[in-house]
Length: 92
Length: 431
Image (spheres, helix red, strand yellow):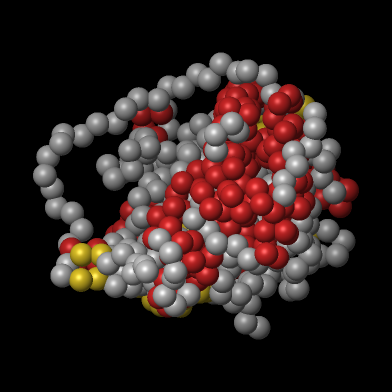
């Protein structure tokens, strides 16, 4: 088993996928910490394949119109709205 | 002493007549309260005011409870110490200078301090039981599906349940009766009555363990600190003196439980927390970073950099990594195998015993600031609590005693699915 090598560039790539900007210090610190965590995750290699018995059933309901959240209430927490809609960020 | 138990102190009056009339209940700040801000301990939601009540809040109000406010917590439930809150850490009223446990640290602290009669927490990997143990109170993590999660801000849906925290087992059982039961707004809820159980949990708090067999998994005892093991052994002897039979059981799969838990929880978190982008709620990009140069993604990234604390970023990134191309089979699939293995192990052990007993936490409460810099060490502190969430089972933490230094130690009983009566009965023999 080889320890996964994680460098700050890889951390930044994952952060990009997750839409989280990071500063240099964070990327460096996370790279070091992820090394430990991923080494622990590697031990899952030792887990045998297990038959997963699920007794799950789908829960259905009739597809009927019913009352839902009022539009004003839904918009109340938005930082910016316009004409009853959410407003996305302005970008250059 | 201001131990910072609440993020928001605001009274919400319930119905005039009900089983909880005259009782005060504090609510963890990731459970939605209509008109009262719900922050999840995050700067991202510092001003978020839910437009509706969670089902459990509706049930509290209908039962006559007076809600005292919203309690402090690790940000989005991600932590074992309540030190990752954007609203400051919470001190432990039962052991000042030490952490109250987490993530429901505020809920356990206000009950331990007597500032609320009861409280609701949430337990994704031990977040009700850990703070109950560290603060010397009682906490119940219900069977998955017993309590509605409607209105709970999701962290890891497949693992988490809302549960009661109280000074006594009987009081915790009474609060569980109020919040339990199916809800059409949470399709994962099930009716305990259809599972061979009923909702009168307090009736089981009779302290009668004379016909009970208590299984002790050595895997969950041997790894604990010696001071914890000593208190645990004394409590087990106490149970034996009350007529309980004890047997040793094996849970070989739990060796992998912490890793499996974190892969699953972080993966679910990376998906759940994608919604926080500063458009529908949260802080707008223009308020955090000024006008952002670039596309929408860069704007969202700036909002999320400013709004999330370090532990939340760490878990979202690790979850994103675990689910990314090439790693899904390696981590996520193996974690699901481990989860199924843990479930089989518990099923087998609970064939031999009515309940299983272990220390709730392998360590006494940490000193404040002790463990923040080393995430993996912190994650390993969850070794005894996370297997229960993986197995979807009910568990209770009850005070077992104190170390020589006066630090609280909790004992955990785990029961079969919808076996809340068994854990309440066993717990009531000790607290």
